[in-house]
Every structure is written in C-alpha cells, then in structure tokens.
Length: 219
Image 1 (cartoon, rainbow, N blue to C red):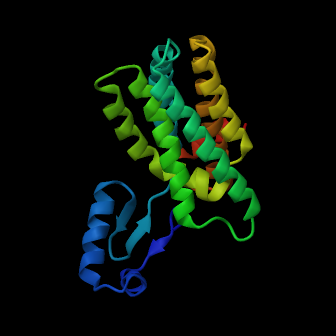
Image 2 (image 1 turned 180 degrees about the horizontal axis):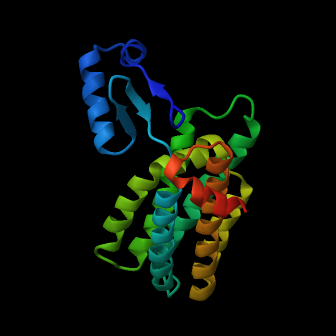
Image 3 (image 1 turned 120 degrees about the vertical axis):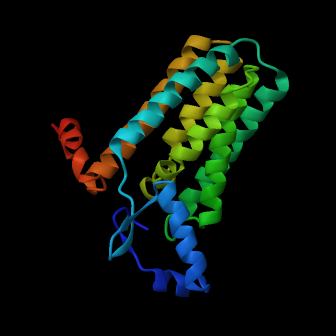
C-alpha cells in the first residue's frame, strides 16, 4: 500500500478472508505504531513517510554502526569473518537472480530474504565487537527503519552497488583497516538515505508539515 492510500476495512476483510473485527483490531495496533492514520468519519489511511524520521534513524545507524565497525576492524574471530563473507555471497546470489527476473520481479519471499541477510550482516559486525547492548539498540532501530528499507528493496531496487559496498566493508575488516571500514559503512548508509529521500520527495509521499524540509533538499 502506498503512503496516504485510503484503507477500506470491508475490502481488507475480503482480501484477507477474515471478519472485519480482527482487521479493525489490526488497524488499531498499526495506528499505535504510527503506520496508519485514523481520520474521523472516514476510516484509515497509510501514514505518509517522514523525511525527519528517516534522517534521524539513518543518522543513528551511521553513528552506531561506525562505532561498532571500529572494533570489528581489529583482529576479528575467524568464525565471524567467515559469516560476513558467506552473507555477501548470499547477497551476490540474490542480485544475480534479481537481474534474471527483471520482468516479473523476484517474489516477495525472496525480497524479504535479502532484507534479513542485510540485517544479519550488520548485526554480525556489531556482535563481533563484543558489545552487550549495542545489538539490542540496533535491532530496535532496524525495526523502526523497516518501512523505509522495504521501500528501498521493493520499489527503488537493490543493485550491484549495494553488493560492492558490503564487499568493501568485509575486505577492510579482514585487512584490519578500521578507518577504511568505518568510511565505507558511513558512505553506504548515507548513499542509501539519499536514494530513499529522493524517491520519497519525487513521489510526494511526505506530510504537509515537511514540505519546507522537502524544498531545502530540492533547492
């Protein structure tokens, strides 16, 4: 569903083959999570995407993942390094399959698999640093960012540039070049953020009160 799209409970019930009651309960939960908006006497709409929230979440990722990769850039356990190489191999396999199936696109199950690979990659780096609380904090940020990452993968698309970014990060970690690994991860997250912001702005998927912020990005 697109941002600002109206959600009709009756249609959702029919599509999901359930009664209206569980759909209404699900809408209430989604509203609490900020994913849908309830409009009096009209029903629900999909919440618009927020440039402010997007920038905040990605800024947190840059700071925390760069912090984590400094430690991972030191001598890393062989098991963790092998896992990172295995994950980039899975990413490459996904990209190759994606290139073969440009029409139609890969099934949603395959796309979700890439998201889980990407998250596991980041959390492997964080865990390699031996931190206790950082993985939990990043898990929370990933959960809150999932809506934007879905947009990146399902709409904007993943390509070999994304794969190369991850390969460069692993190579720098293997070579114990922590400064280079930190730079690569910052550049990767920033590039993804800029791609998402541009797509959201072009499709006017932001709330009215963020149009001033939109103009500052396009001027």
